[in-house]
Each structure stands twice: as C-alpha cells, then as structure tokens.
Figure 1: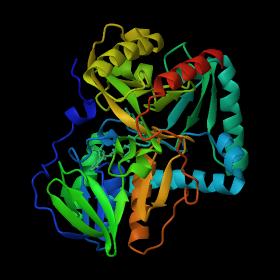
Figure 2 (figure 1 turned 90 degrees about the horizontal axis):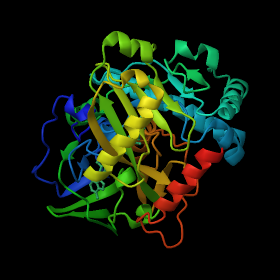
Figure 3 (figure 1 turned 60 degrees about the vertical axis):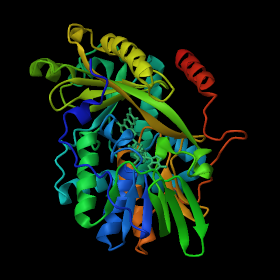
Figure 4 (figure 1 turned 180 degrees about the vertical axis):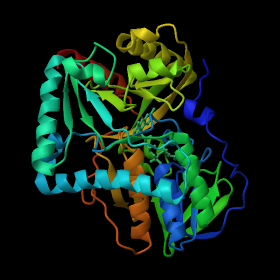
Length: 424
Ligand SMILES: Cc1cc2nc3c(=O)[nH]c(=O)nc-3n(C[C@H](O)[C@H](O)[C@H](O)COP(=O)(O)OP(=O)(O)OC[C@H]3O[C@@H](n4cnc5c(N)ncnc54)[C@H](O)[C@@H]3O)c2cc1C
C-alpha cells in the first residue's frame, strides 16, 4: 500500500515553481496555492493585475490534490438547517451560489481545456439508519418546494439500481453534481494561471504580514513583497501568518483509501451510474469509482491532521467500513492511503470577506471543490474592481475564547460525534 494520494500518483507532473525570483512589488499577494488561491490568481491575471501566489509547499499540495473529487451542489449544512439559521432570502442566495460554483468549475475546465476527468454523473446521499430516511425525505420536499429543484428519492427496494449493497436504507439522487480528478484539476488551474500571467511560487511561506500606508508588506524567508492587497487562501492549513484567521479555523483530518482497479464489470455492478456517494452519518463515509475503476473510499477515521501513523490507522478503519458496504471486494487489496486537512469553522459555515483590510475565503468543511474555485474567482473580481458576489458577506466569523489554532478539544468532539451517530 502506498501512503500517497492516488490522484497525485496518476496525474501528469506539474513543473516546479521553486527558487524563482520574488518580485519586490505586486498588486495582489495570494497566500496559498490550492483551488481558492489558484482560481483567484487565474482571474486576477486575466483582469490585468500583477498577482503573486505564495505556496509554502508545492502548488496544489494541500486539500486540493487529496480530496474525494466530488463537485457537489449545496453546502455542508442542509437547506433545512440553513433556512432555520438564516431565513429564506439568505438561504436562496447560498443555494444559488452553490449551483453557480459548480458551473464556475465546469466553465473554467472548458475554457482552460483542463483535462481532469470532469463528468456530471450526479450524487447519491444514503441513509445509514432507517430513521435517517425522514431527513432525506424532508430535504427532497424542501428543495422542490422552496427552490423548485429536482432530486429523486430511492426507496430501499430500488437501491440496487444505484448501489449493490444491502447496508443502506434508501437514498436521494441529485443529478447535477459532478466528479473529477482533484490533482489534475489543481495542476490544470496552476498551468492556466501561469498562462494568464500570474507569478507562481513553490516553497515560499508568507511569514508575517504588516499593514502600512501603501497596503501590506508580506515577509518571507526569501525577501519581502510590498503589495496593495492580500488574499488569504490557506483554509485548513491557516497558520501564524494570519493569527486572526488561525483562531477561527479548526484543522480536521480526513482520510481516503483507494483499492487496486476492479474488473470493470464488477465496478459497474457496485456503482452502476458512477455517482459521487456519501451517507448521513456525522462521521460520514464518502466514496466513488475512480476513472480506472478503483473504489475510492473516504471518511473522518481520525480527527487529527495527517501523519504517516494516522494514515495507516485510518486505512485499516476505512477498509473495514468499505467491506461492510461492499463485502464483494474483500479480495481486492488497498493500493493507496492518504489524508488531508479540512478547514472547519465554529459554526460549520464557510467564511469569506475582509478582516484587518485583508481578504480571505476559507472554512469549506469538506465541501470546497466548487465553492473554493468560485470564491477565489469572485474575490479576484472584487479586488480588481469588477462586479462580484459573495453569498457569505456579512456573516459573523466566530472564534472561541482561548482558541488560537491548536484544536485540543478534537478528541472530545470526536467522542461527541461518535455518540451522536450512535443515538441519532
Ligand atoms: C481528504 C479530503 C477529502 C475531501 N473531499 C472533498 C470532496 O469530495 N468534495 C469537496 O467539495 N471537498 C472536499 N474536500 C475539501 C476540499 O478539498 C477543500 O475545501 C479545498 O481543496 C480547499 O481549497 P483551498 O485552496 O482553500 O485550500 P488548500 O487546497 O488546502 O490549500 C491551502 C494551501 O495554503 C498553503 N499555505 C498555508 N499557509 C501558508 C503560508 N503561510 N504561506 C504560503 N502557503 C501557505 C498550504 O500549503 C496549502 O497548500 C476534501 C478535503 C480533504 C482533506
């Protein structure tokens, strides 16, 4: 078993952007080279701004090349929860933005000719317990009534048409969602941003950011950049360079395994329509077929950010979970295991706006492929003085007393969510 992301392993290498000369001046410095930062850089460069992207590791290194590749409608919170929290107008804005975000990904892939196995095959949400069916039924009815948005309920008796398992009690299909190879997408975005004229850097961390009369001075180990604007796009990897953001983001590990390729007919039997699949647990499983017919199976098997040990332990737990759903593949070995860090927030909503005059977008809570791309693009428009949309504008970005970025409470939260999965 290789301890690395399947997606990175099967994607064409990206050229190195290490050791390039740093400019002394820029219009915008983007901190973080994932979807948020690269999408912003692409759009800013297209709009004629001098944009420099600083990535501490290599471009796409973070969650953007390690995720499940599910480009989903909606947000981490269901529409019912959003209606209760925000009322109808804001929930409509958030829901519409989630659809616009999916279209934004599709448009960029088409315009920039990014070869990343993008396909709109829909997603399937599955009821882990019988009583979870009521949640799916309510979501289906609400989406139809409030948003005129079609989804399809699948009763247990018909579930075989969608997935070859007896483990779940029914599901809901949303045909609009898509899948892609996340590393190919991240690398394609980097190439597109470079073509548009963005100045990209691997291996350069923003260490401190000081405000001054002409904007900001961003210091790195390789020199300082004077810039008019800064856009923080560091999500789950947000650190001490932006302490106000660090104390609002909770880094949480999520882990994935991928099997050896299955016989294509078996793969088609397990997941006939090639949908992106996840279930209704708090400690949810998310899984799909890869383009070469592996089962890619993820979950929050350990809450802590990834180390080689947590990846190994998680691989064992995830394999047990996968075989509980698909005992048919007991003989197929696990080929890859990896983890990545999600950016959670204290209200489980993403947040994007301006803090201490610096722009930021983060906190996607495992639901960020589409939204990160979209917010990156929209913040580029905003910084360049063009028309922009931010569905999260004005939302309070909460923190917790005594929290500065070290999530000491995660073991307790993990126990709490395990308890919730047991009782609810
Ligand atoms: C295992 C896993 C599975 C997931 N599955 C899905 C899924 O199927 N669908 C979905 O929608 N979402 C999923 N997500 C979430 C999604 O991947 C993220 O929301 C998205 O990639 C966030 O992109 P980003 O650019 O904001 O952050 P990232 O891609 O994490 O990039 C942030 C970058 O900032 C860099 N950085 C941090 N500090 C500094 C600094 N001081 N200076 C310079 N660089 C810095 C980091 O090195 C990192 O590369 C998953 C995430 C994980 C971890």
